[in-house]
Image 1 (cartoon, rainbow, N blue to C red):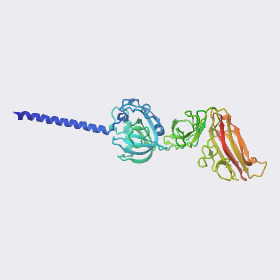
Image 2: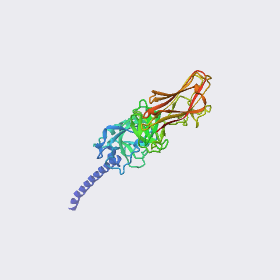
Image 3: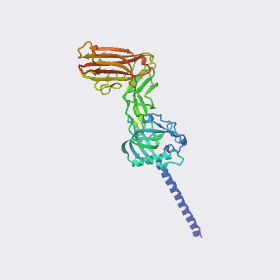
Image 4: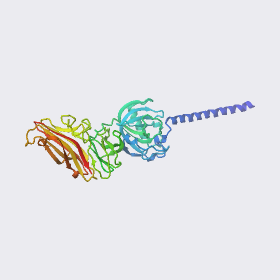
Length: 450
């Protein structure tokens, strides 16, 4: 009797164990699939978090790596919410893709780099890891397809050097030694769009002028054809540029975030859809308070040499250390003409005169020697002009000639207060006729404002 009672019990237990095994297997497989898609801040990374509808998909914002890596690292990082505005904005970077790989969480891990060597990460999740509630799903699938059309990522990094215009939502990651990570762990995660080789970046601005004032620096630079915006970088050590202002659409800016007595160094870059230009020549300024006198010209004695005359713009061979014409001081000077044949040389520097100034005085040292023998006829001339920022003539301060030749240097001084509040060019033009040389040598400029 017991044998017949036990048999159905054994069969029932066997069925239950099988069902349990199937259940456990199903749960195990689900956990394995879920874990393959990542864990830390995963809802934020794919747009299934509580704040996903705060993301403004309709207004992408252009930015740079140099700016984004200066954003404050949130403490603590929320697990299922977003840090505004950094994680609720679609950012657009025109930069360079330098390496990539496929991660174990199925993301494509991209390392981006700018012209200064700053890097940050961008990630393209696998579409199957994105929940149906995410407003980012279509963009993620789009970026994934765009990338796979060009590359086949593997679990090893592949090195490339490709200009890209890449769009994605900002996301602060936890620090765990990721290759290419920004200092503040900011990423584009997820990437929503990527364009390879979007076009050529613009040329760099040819010059940048920094004019110190009281608790401010007035900056102006040459415009660049084809540029859609400019980025200004500021640092307190030469060559140590950090991001300061981006998206500027004019060629002047007033920096009021300065401290009197501190020297600031600036460069500016031009941007368009093709990327960011190389930086302009560096300009520096030391703001002062109390209404003191400030010298606002850059490289006033030409001591940066012929290979780096900025902010001066000169015709060839004008910036010279040739001992045949000694400088007023230092090793370099500007030597216009002196060829003994028909020739024209020009030299100019754009300078901004702060609107807060009350006086402005231009000084420089001039030496003239000539092989002309006449004491009555003008053959060769040097004009000192003031032009507007575009090169339009405003006034001629003085005209010198072979008749003014004399031993040594003599200082010249002019009141240019009329142009306070404007960006002007201090412009010199030397004209020499077909015979007998006349050399016009200038050095040690000052444009003092008070």
